[in-house]
Image 1 (cartoon, helix red, strand yellow):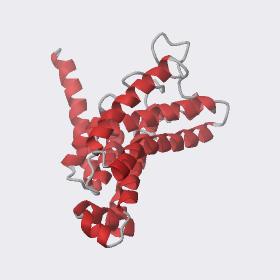
Image 2 (cartoon, one colour):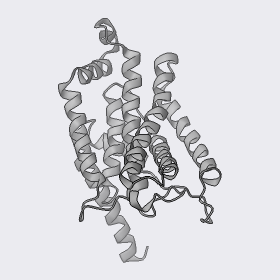
Image 3 (cartoon, helix red, strand yellow):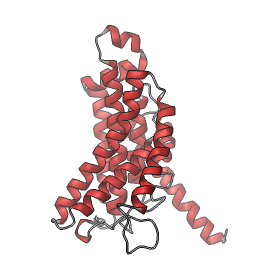
Image 4 (cartoon, one colour):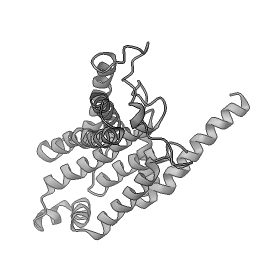
Length: 255
């Protein structure tokens, strides 16, 4: 269950582009870029107060994921490159780039394996009782995303582009801008998930495989939720419970 907040955000990173008619397969890479961006900024600001480090690391993580996703959005908007192809390729590029960083410029020399420096102790986010700090953040963002899609002009524009691009163009909606913006928002959600993964979960450092398949789990969450932002919450809780139960079952049965 400890990953539920992260896969809610990963689910939102898939849901938002779906509403514009895009299929974002790149949440894994966007999440990883957000995590390594947060790690780099936290280490660079390690001498500052913890709250400053957290805020900057979160913002930089969001921006890192947004910029990474915007590449696919820009390719789609300007060159017609299919987002499934570009996001899959960007996942591979992100994996290679991050492997280089954690074995080179960002490697903690005290660690025998590829790893970034740990988040400063003052910036490590400990749970509020039994509730992880990131969980209410993810829930609020799911609510805000649902409100944005249903109650705002931007949400209407997203829906119009997703349902009929010819009608959207006739109505004067800037389709290219909507495509890039939807991907940037999605990447920001995934980047935030990566920053939370880095700041909240022991050992508070970026290591190879830290994200596991959380970004790809976002696809499962979005499809289970039927592209409904609020549906990502029960879907993420279900998948999180199944993951936790599977681990316990394997341990209990010795398999």
